[in-house]
Every structure is written in C-alpha cells, then in structure tokens.
Length: 277
Ligand SMILES: Nc1ncnc2c1ncn2[C@@H]1O[C@H](COP(=O)(O)OP(=O)(O)OP(=O)(O)O)[C@@H](O)[C@H]1O
Ligand SMILES: [Mg+2]
Picture (tube, helix red, strand yellow):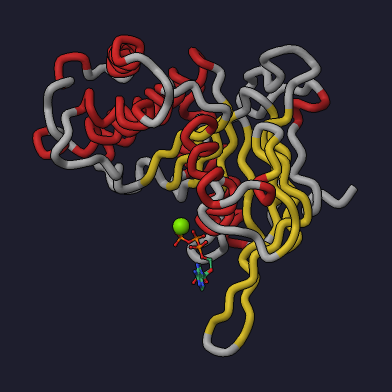
C-alpha cells in the first residue's frame, strides 16, 4: 500500500494508537469526521506555482486526536485553513462532519463553522475588552440559545479549564497560559464536531506549555472530541493518538524527509516521557 497517499485512521480498523489509547472510542463503526480527497491548493509565488497541498488524502474518525507536523512552509496552516473553510481548495474535496464544504456559500459557511467547529490559534484571538466569561460566551451568541443556557455552559467550560476564579478578568489581566485556556474553553463550549488548533502552545513559556498540553489531553479524554492540531513541538504531538507529517503536499505517518524523520523520532521519545510521567 502507498502509505503516503492514504493517511487513513487506524481507528477504522480498530487498532490501538501508538500511545496505547483505543482509537475507536465509540465502537468499531466510528463516524468519519474529516474526509479529504485529492485535496490540492495551488498558490502563485513570484511568477510560478507552488503546491503546499497536492493530492492530499486524510481521514479522521470521531474522537481521534491527530497531530500535523512538518517543516516551516510545508503547508500545515494552508491545510488547516482549508479544513475550517476560510480558504478554498484549487481542486479536490473536503467533508467535515458529513458536510461537503464546497457546497456552502460564504455566509452559510460562517454559520456552519459556528455550529460545527472550534478553533484554537497560537495568538489566542480573544476580544481584549471582554471578560473571560464573555469571550467564551461569544460563539454561542450567534446561536438560538437562551442566555441562561449560554451562561451555564460557560461556567462548565471555565471550570473545565481551571479558570472559574478568573471569569471576570479581561485578557490583559491574564497570563498567556490563562488566555490560551480561555480560548480552549471557547473552542469546546459549543460542543463542536471538530476542534482544530494551529500551534496552540507556540506562544507560551515551557511551564505554560505543559499546563496547556495536560489540559488538552484531559479534555480530549473527558469529552472525546475530534481534534486536529498543528504543532512544531514533539512533546505536544506526543499527547495525540497519531502524528501525520506533511511531505511534498501529502500526509504520511512514515516520513522520509530528514527533517520529518528527526521529528518522528522526537515524537516517539516524547511519548515515552509522557507515559513514564
Ligand atoms: N495566500 C497565500 N498566497 C501565496 N502563497 C501562500 C499563501 N499562503 C501560504 N502560502 C505559501 O504556501 C506555503 C505553505 O505555507 P503555510 O503557511 O501553510 O506553511 P506552514 O507549514 O504552516 O509553515 P509554518 O510552520 O512556518 O507556520 C509557503 O511557501 C507559503 O509562503
Ligand atoms: Mg503555519
């Protein structure tokens, strides 16, 4: 089998992940949450074409936590932008939670994204004048939901990320790690089908990195959400069920590019260090 061409979930075959966690949390007929087929994105750069995503295949099943790695400029953010529908592919298809994204107009996409996706960015993207509670509440204000239900959900989410006592603070009064916890609460609060994160620990100091990773690991175990996380950090990739590497526009679990093979070894080592505490 051509491993580069089919980065397909081991969950589909009922295997266990590299870190020993079952990758089929809801039985053998796990639902497919992400399906990319022959996905290609071509950019024009200095008079010639580049293809950071080029005939890429990806299947992620319900409850999986997948890390995407690759050298700078390999196309990780490009792929995430396609997955969340803020960019459109040149060719190929993307379905998320059964919805073919190409079928949605720009305004329908915005509404669909609000209901089905949670997004965590490196720079948190919190609204500076709003409190932690108001930031987490924000995506649900676009939905038909009573204020009471919104606030109940926010309370649960802030408690889950350990920030109940900071609920009334604006981002300027929170540390980087705390701000990222608010952003994580905002991503989980609406019970989305898919959560994507682009370098969620890239802006944090080491102590905050470990706290945020431990939190993501716990939330994933608790809520069994489907997560796709781009990261440069092998320690971060090691908390996931599987790691895929971008290579020549495609995803593979078995990279051959020397930068990726070095990363793959570092992820294996980091998995051992998480499992030994
Ligand atoms: N809108 C755009 N127009 C033209 N080229 C683009 C555009 N967006 C990305 N690129 C190019 O596509 C390639 C992949 O970029 P991308 O941002 O996806 O990389 P990345 O893997 O996320 O890198 P990093 O690890 O540095 O964040 C780069 O060569 C980049 O310059
Ligand atoms: Mg990027």
